[in-house]
Amino acid sequence: MLDFYRRLIKLRKEIPALSCPDKTKMEVTGMEEEKIIFIRRWKDDSHVFMVFNFNREESSFNVSFPEGVWRKLLDSSDGIWNGPGMISPDGASGEEFITMKGLSFAVYTGEGVL
Image (cartoon, rainbow, N blue to C red; front, side, top):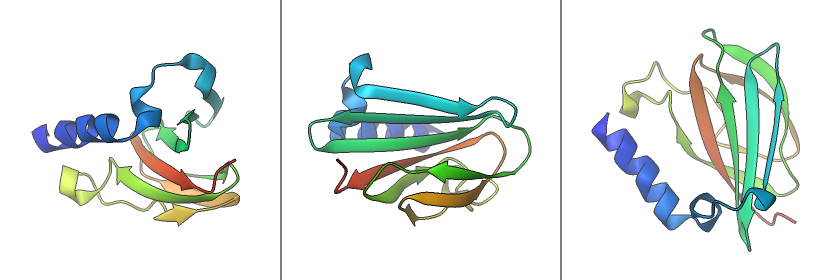
């Protein structure tokens, strides 16, 4: 668990979009019934897109990734964090149908994002 928090802190320090608390550079949307939240944050050329599944069960749903190419940085359900094993995609662009483990989240970084 300590390594997981160290990784989160490292991401916050290394990625300007995560270290900038400016709420004008953040978009939050979600799907209430499915208990899914999407958060997009940016600062200059740094962009992150996070997907949170607050449902206790595994969930499959459509995600509209912002324009650009997105690469996964972290999945909280990964076995390295003692999770049940990750199933979220390693990369994405545009509209994607994804599946996530229950009570998990994934962090993506964007390239070529406008």
